[in-house]
Length: 255
Ligand code: BGC
Image (cartoon, rainbow, N blue to C red):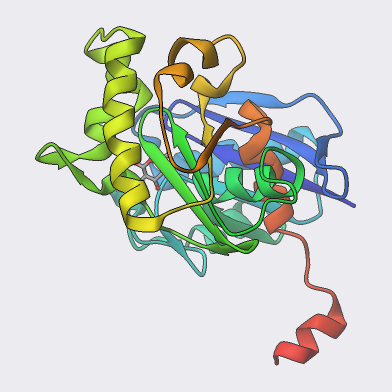
């Protein structure tokens, strides 16, 4: 079954139809820069353009960089504040005429890694952390997602963890990979103290095979520590998986 996955980030909005059984894109992905300020109506216009480009009229899964509950945005750390309180699912459904499901971007990446990537068959407490503009987190307990954990906003060094150890901070402060890894190490120690995960999956741009040797060998954790496998595509694939329509018999069980 194919579902359109769209990953909405601070700099780009990327989408492609996904085969949700295989976890693969069925067309090349399209990327449109996020409109400046990332206002809800402007982002919705881009989502419509992407859906039209794929002549889409089925379900759509979308990610947002914030806490999303029943489709409504509760926080907006790296995107316009006007998103707070917006029913993003309703907005994108209206914009595209397609049923839209919205979830947090790191949660989506985690869903994809658990199904098709570094978390396949992993048991226990699994934590996916994405290092990019901010730090995203997705926590799984025996395969079940505990959504919206937002562990990038934990307090660290009298600020937020993402203000100290996100990948963007390495570039902004011109840190060497080794100095940045020291910060990531502090963050991981804190997170391990709180959750004692069995496996930590490191995602975001830094999980690309070229980048991994620059910092991962400097990290020591009690948990097994592995790079994500799906990299750029994790958000799109996870969003599409999250939008899988509930079969009628499952729906009647929960009614
Ligand atoms: C946001 C999270 C998001 C993460 C990665 C954080 O600033 O609060 O919701 O998952 O950035 O984009």
